[in-house]
Length: 465
Image (cartoon, rainbow, N blue to C red):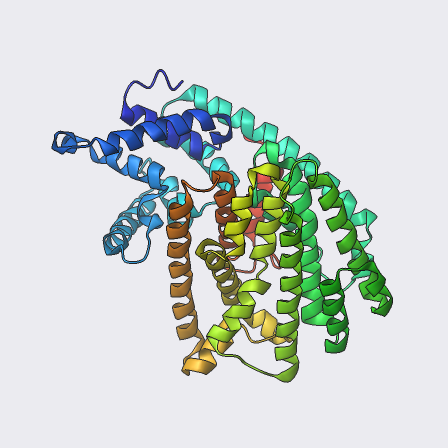
């Protein structure tokens, strides 16, 4: 297939199609070869190459740096201008139903490639591919449909196994006040790692995300501060003997958390020889519970912190360090000693993802959270500190989300040749799935019709062949 693409334009166009159709996991070596070839060409570029067409230049830019104007970093004003320019033209296309790019333009405005969850993008692009006059590879399209449907069967099987695990552990009976979000939890894990070879990663992630969701509800809406102090202390000690000091409704959850982490430790010990890898994952969970407790304490005291103080805690309670640590752990020796040393420095990529996730969540959920009784969100903190309206606070926080995306881009690019791509993609995909669930509503707690539609397409409805 790559051999038949005889020039740079066709090879890059082929990679573009492969990635957007969700097939890159089949062609990673070939893609890497072409990318290295293009990098070498850029090193040798001179004035004689200036006649390359705009399509090739733009495609090369996106594939080598992954997504043109949406991959802006701080200080790149020309890309801010490019985004404004292209957005204007995409909006015009999205209003012209006769344009072959009508549907693609509408989707690109909402989820540009860089921010799109890979599986959702693949499903959407498969439907749009035949309308694009620049794309006409029917063999590739047929392969994409078969691959999508095949993976969907795998996902359906995994979801069934997770559902049985949930029921076997009687989690709803243990914590009847907590949200039951089996499908949404699985979709979150799938958003972080979708490839078939990472089935074990998803199997581990769904259990950890379950704990995060249950703990969030326990700290937020049910337990007293004294009870939460006991639970937080028990998590810090990480000792099953602590169970005797806990209220009855907490005992089952605490025991299950320790049991699952022990299973994970035994499971990954076969593939991971980094001695402190598991400790890193445990410490992330301990830090999460500390952050949850601090927020519960603030709420109990009626304290509204300044934005900076709030974000130091809330970016941890957003759980992204836990997602990252467990994802790395499940990848075995792919996550090397260097990866864990990098992660323990709290790099901008991890911090920005936490900031982004927290702000996206707060913006769409703060009204409901305040009505039921919850620590002040970033919105309330900003309103109080700066004396502005809710609308003004949200506008400013949305700007911070944009800045966080730039930070993610910059750090991703900075480490793209130093760390395994799958490690960086794990973190980037956490940002993407957050953007999906918290786009306009809290889609995790209250899935709207659009959220349900995308989930159905991914898990329930095969692509017509």
